[in-house]
Structures are given as C-alpha cells and as structure tokens.
Amino acid sequence: MATVIKRDPGKFLRELRVHYGDVWKMPTSKYLIQPDFVVVDPKTGKKTKVSFVSLDDGEVVGVVYDDLG
Image 1: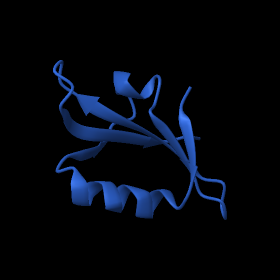
Image 2: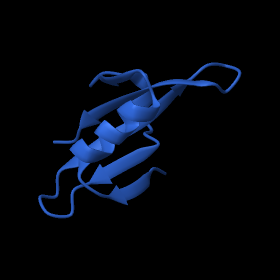
Image 3: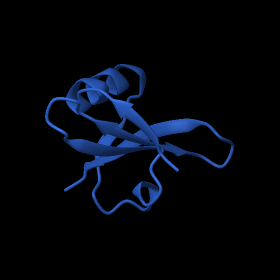
Image 4: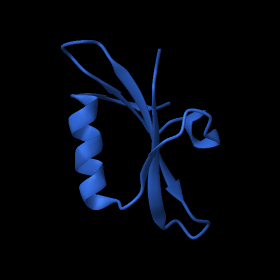
C-alpha cells in the first residue's frame, strides 16, 4: 500500500529534483503499478503517484511519477 502525503505535488517534485538527478513523468511505467507515494494536494485534491527506481543492489537512481485522473 502506498504512503499518502498531503502536500502540493509540484512543490514535492521540485524538492525531489534537488536530491535526485533524474525525475521523469512516465505514465506507463511499471514502477507506478504499486507506487511508493501518492501525493495529494489538500487544496485542489490533485493526486500524483510517485515511485523510486532502484538498481538490484538497492541504490536509488531516479524517480518516476504521473498524475492520477
């Protein structure tokens, strides 16, 4: 089950870009089938799925996201 974060999705993604070099919007990514986070904007209700992409050794190499309709 994904963790729900109540925050502005745009701001959340900008902060992720500071720490992770690769942040991509990939609607058809297999990593978004079971996202790590669902970010919900408390003002608008906009939802964004976010997942970390990691190598087999556990090193995180990027982040993928997509908006929920």
